[in-house]
Image 1 (cartoon, one colour):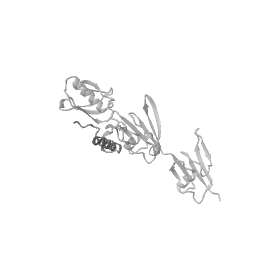
Image 2: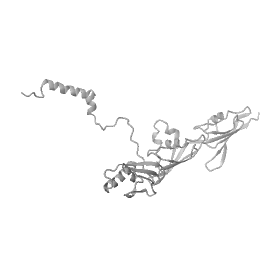
Image 3: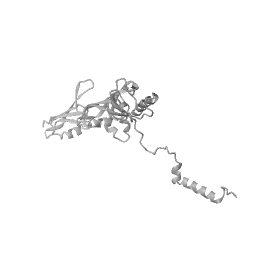
Image 4: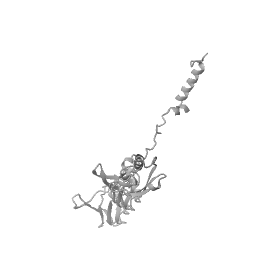
Length: 286
């Protein structure tokens, strides 16, 4: 006589399986979709796209006569044996490998081609770093997700006299682009979105740091870096303070107005300083 699934033994077994799933046991892990990414897992990096001027080596497995080392033309074409001109400029390395492999297979030249492309020199995707950096010049964009901070690091970082504000120019969607990036804000909490993506042809300009000039009856006259929110009192303190002959009543600030003319003002000690201000401390008459 056949034993039915409604027997007490089978019912208890089914209840045990349900409890394991609810408790997150080994069977619960099996019940999860295999393709579900882990929480907080980093997104896959974009693949480098070949550009005009890049020097590459194309190889076909077990076909050494099809090995080619060449430069991608300005039109994005390369001349490959058996296939003629192939347009791979703008394609990712994987897409270019597949394009050549499909051509060899569809033309009955190679039955199961395995094509590999190695980028020997990056010449088609470059950006310029200029101004107050330690190593100005043109640098290759060897990865597709190159950021502003990555490129500045390649240029040795900003020089001692470099400003915190960086200007990035280029083209986006066929239109000129100009963005001012505050470097300290990039490293502040939530500042990742300010670390903009660098594309081929972009130029980065790091201007000189803003300066304030102090002379007269101060301990250390000369030029000094204008820090953010610096007041007249802080600027004088950076200069070592007044000498015994200096007087606060004799402090004058020469400031260039928007029209270009120079104005002489007498701000309070908590008055904000501006780039290019010249502070003169007069000698006390008494």
